[in-house]
Image 1 (cartoon, rainbow, N blue to C red):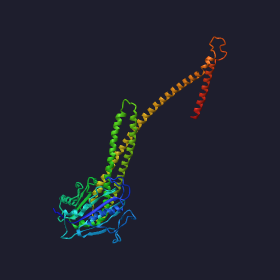
Image 2: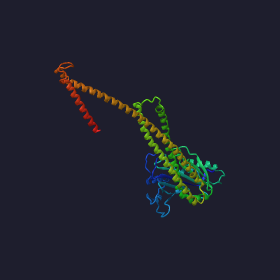
Image 3: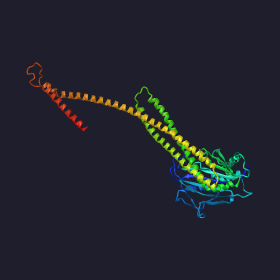
Length: 481
């Protein structure tokens, strides 16, 4: 197997949101700020400074439409605004072509060794010179709204094309290992898929479901050419490739975000099921049906508040899943539309690139649809828990109110009885001196019935005044109510 390549060429595509709704950041970015033109400049300076290259074109940060070139190269009055550069000391050439693509920034850079027939052998072990200071290694802590990057390495192989694509897998693996040589960023990803593409062999590393925490190298493609025809076809449709890969990263990145939403919602459902079992055992199936203690009632009220907060969080996760599904569906259509354009330009079918659009993208949508169907039952479960607790609290509270009302009624009756007794005692006490001021007459005595005794007369007058005043008070209270 050859330990050298011919005319290696590296293509770097990186993306980040510049506007729009970004639901969450699966990488845990600390600064929730979307990209601006300064970020684009910093990224190009970061990857070009190790090679001693500085861009000289002017920058433009506003365009008439949402799709526009970010550079303003005075040497290019019309057409795509890219900047070409040379690095004679390292026998390298390249260009940069930054774009604003819809709601995102798309960074595009090509770095290649020019062909020198008979003297253009490039040792595989020197591929780390194309990644000086790890400039093309994905960030360990990606910024908010970061969509990802793709590295495409193409090279000619000076040998007939093997009949079996697996025979060049060791060479492909060795190329990337040397490219990232000396960088401790985690284990290298396994080969995800290999294709025969336009007469060459294309090897893809990095599962689209893995984020940078699992695969710190990002999306890697290496393409071995055996004839010049493969390179010519790529040139015809190359300028559509940045937008195609943008949709790739939007689809895969959104699906990875949806897994976080899924995990959060699933945790809520599991905790709710556990609590419903406890509620059913301790309260709903309690044969003694004892009244709730004050502590139990307080705990249930607090749990009800917690569940209402949980229900809001749960609804947010379902909303995020629906947003993820719609985002994937939109970008899936855009991916296939750009693919059709590339096939017309290449005048060749692109079955290899259709694999993602017709397999993974569809599977991602189906998975999120299944998640939503499952979690809609969870919404009913959460509502059941809330209604059950609310019912327990309301029933117990009603019983407590009824008991308190009975206690208050008894207290009022006691107060009335005591009040009547005290009033009667007061009347008797106030009129008792009359008993001794006048002699009492008894039945059968002389002069019986000629006049009432002053004591009896005082009591009768007091009772009459009490009845009259009580009646007046009753009428006044009724009128006020």
